[in-house]
Length: 194
Image (cartoon, rainbow, N blue to C red; front, side, top):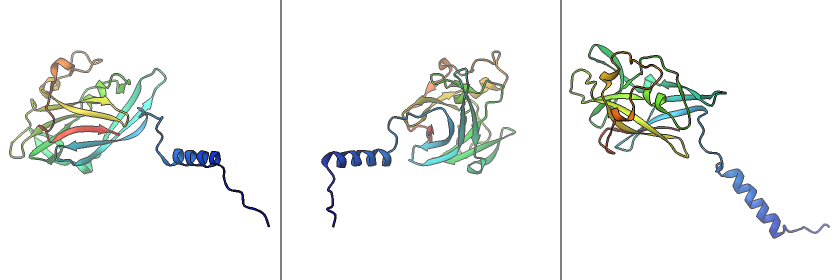
C-alpha cells in the first residue's frame, strides 16, 4: 500500500493563489474603449434604466470610432413641437433623447470624449407641459473611471443646434456653453457606459 503524501506549505500557498486569481475578476485590466458596452441611465431615485449600447472600434490612428444604439423599446414616443422624440419618464420629468443631427467624425480619444457626449443629448420637461422647450437641454459630461464612463448632467440650450454649426469639425457645445447641474436636480442624474 502506498503512503499518501501531504501537500507542503508551498504547494498549498501556490494552489490557493492560483485559485484566487482564476476566480476573481481581472484586476490588472482597466476599462477599455473597445467592444460593445451597455448604456445605462442612473436616476435620482436609484433606478437603473438600460438605454442601449455603444460600440467602440479602435482605429490605427489612435482614435476610437463609436456608434450609439438607443434601444427604442425602452422609450415612449412623444410628439413635441411638431417633432417626434423618444423619451423616458419618471421622477416628475420626461427626458427625451435628442440625436445630434449633423455630420461629425464619430470618434473619440481617451482624453477627448466630446463627440460621444454630443450623441447623448437630452431635453427635459414636465409631463403636463406642452411642446419641447429646447433651452432645457442636458449634456452629459463623461469622465473615465476604472469601470467605464460616467456622465454628469450639464445644462445647455439645444436651440444652438437648430441650424448647422459653422464649424463641423469641432463639437459645438464647448465648456463655456455648459453649466453644471447639481446632483439630484434632474431625474436622470448620471449616464454610464459600462
